Amino acid sequence: MLAASLALRGSDAEKTVEKLHDAIAAGDLASASALVDFRYRLHEMLGAVFDDAPAADQDMAIELAKRMFAQTTETLWKTHYADRPTTTTIVKREGPHVWVEARAEGDGRPSFTWTYRVTSLDAGSRITQREYLSGPLRSDTSAFYPMAVRHLTKELGRTPTLAELNANLPTLQGRIRARSYRVPELPKSQGKS
Image 1 (cartoon, one colour):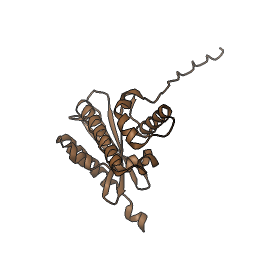
Image 2 (cartoon, one colour):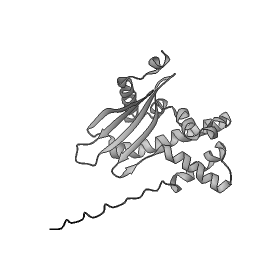
Image 3 (cartoon, helix red, strand yellow):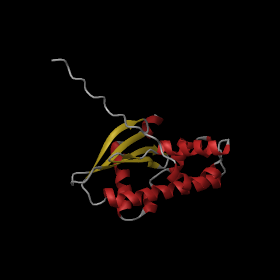
Image 4 (spheres, one colour):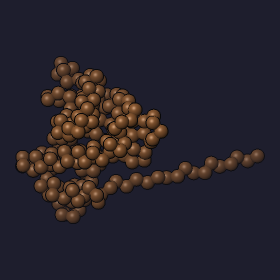
């Protein structure tokens, strides 16, 4: 019974994304941020580092996450998404989560995609993850925070506190990156004639 009451309908997920996009288009990032559950995402990515921290440090982590969300939105919205033909599609359902893709394409420019995980929570439908895909560039918030913790753990010789992570996060944003390697295809062997 509880699982059924928490099940998120696809139309609710799409409406949540539409509300977010309407707020962004109106320049109202505060209303857009209110549709995102930053606490949920930080708990998910940081576990005990977030959960065991004092409330003030948790609040600072949430504030930093909001700033990063706003920065990414302001940087990419106008240049890659706004004023373009768009489609919104449900791409996957996963327990209490519905993944919604919002794609801008069809105007001769390279396609750009926001991918949202919308989750049914006590406060209603909230976005609990957002990623983007722009050509070969892809965000991966699931990797960034753990990489930051590993980086600081190596520097400090122990797991950082949330306060230490908060203090270092702005400078780590530009310094740490996930490495990816592109392996070229092997040449096709020519058959004997």
